[in-house]
Length: 177
Ligand SMILES: [Zn+2]
Image (cartoon, rainbow, N blue to C red; front, side):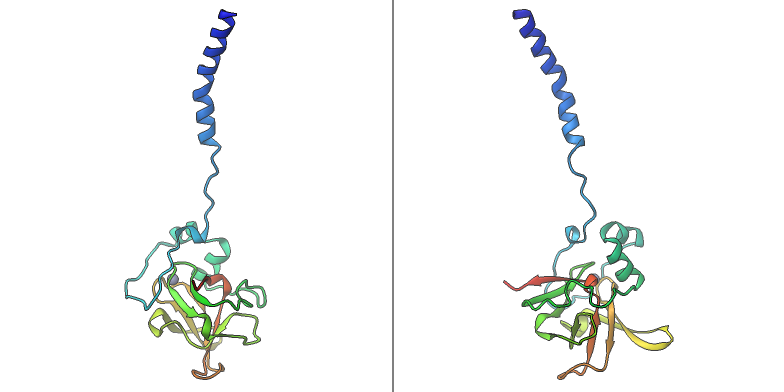
């Protein structure tokens, strides 16, 4: 019995380092998730831009996010997760977390994309001419990271008359406390 016990102990001692190593190896590998690297920033843009290589963005963003934010893609209308969101809070850039729109300026534009009549602050978005579809449109980017958000049109409601037509994929909603 003593021999058998010793053999069993030796077996356990031999095996335990292997099982520890095995345990380490089977820990779940973190999947690239957009929220993992995101810090929500409230308030007006402070002028400090976020610059990352396209490779870095590819690692940090999901496929859809990369396509829309970095390659100026557009989600199909009526597919975005934030289209019908009516909660009170702030919409942030899905790439860098900068505050972009307040829920109080969101309205139903009947276009199939989340729409706002005014940005969080004019400083938080960059507007530039986009002629890719033949007619000139005004593209809207995040002022901090340059991520593509959507376009702005002049058929919005008062008080601004503007329609910021955004991709849900480019935005992350943070509910007010
Ligand atoms: Zn951004």
